Length: 506
Image (tube, rainbow, N blue to C red):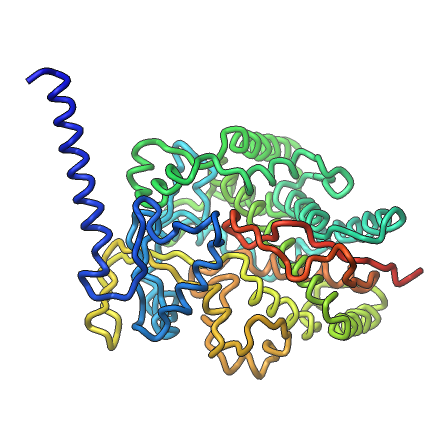
């Protein structure tokens, strides 16, 4: 046989083996009699993502379609078989009761070749438990009080910049200015750096934030491979984050640490806490290992704090102001609460007042329900798990698990008329009637978002100061309803959120 013939035969054999492998994989749920949508080659059940549907649409649709058919349904996340949890009891088991079997997320990370992926959100196993132990105290209520003045300082800058803008035009695009606001907060708190993006939209931190968040390194095929075979992708030294983004954040962290250590500088920020962890050789984790952090670990944690903190919080604030503009009577009610709170503290805004604004808490909680920024949670089974009461439903070891947050938040049995924005859903009495896993903007259980206290704090501070000073209303440029950007994994609008803004002091 000629060399060409042998090569063609080898290609044919490999093609046949690949075909058989994929055919067997895509038939797994049919063989088990588990409800599922028919998958497509390569993209699985994500055929319409980025084309006609967002990840949030898919999460919501699959949950509402198959709820009641069993405790879970089958799904294909690209080439990877997964289960979508449909039963609240099972969701509670996975996230809380039986957490030890579902502690991992099973997502791509590569600390060696892609150091910024070595952060708390992506790590699994011993590395995750060790790092979580190191960072838990970083987001305690005491540390939040430590960071509070910095956030208030940046918020005053936001109020001033918005006021200056109103002198030129009272129609304001809120999404961008609030993203610059939270960028400045995270930059100051995480890195101790004055980003100044509120006054300079093209500041370096804002550019890198946009790039890290919105520009993927790979196309859909390679991204699908990373998510389908994360262990193999790691062995192949694949990377997910752009090189210039990695270089920027590594340089900023290294230079900041060196400068502060050489000059013995202490600040009220996240970086100062990380430096203390880096230098305290006496601290040990539950495995007896030193808790001190490496520069790479510090860079990865500040990176995810920056990316997750600025985008999710600014998006939630934008949506909250949009809904308050649509219902001015509710905006007036919240403003009264804010004004009364300021008055109680002699027109100051101390840390303690955050706990006193009950209606503010309801407004933010309902916004996070209706506008679920992170559409689903990821988990992975460490061992085979038979669903209690359903012996035919077994989550196999290594199986990817999807908790459809967006679907749960739109379940009419939990939230009647879910398309309606109604803060009354989150009165203390109504909260008490629901399971904690029926509201998941920050996840739930031991692997819930470690930074949720910080996120909640900056959202409330920002909204309180804006509503005290300004009134927001719809205008001709306001999009009703808002168009969602289907190409973004996190919930975001396709266009800006334009509102009319009036200075209440004028």
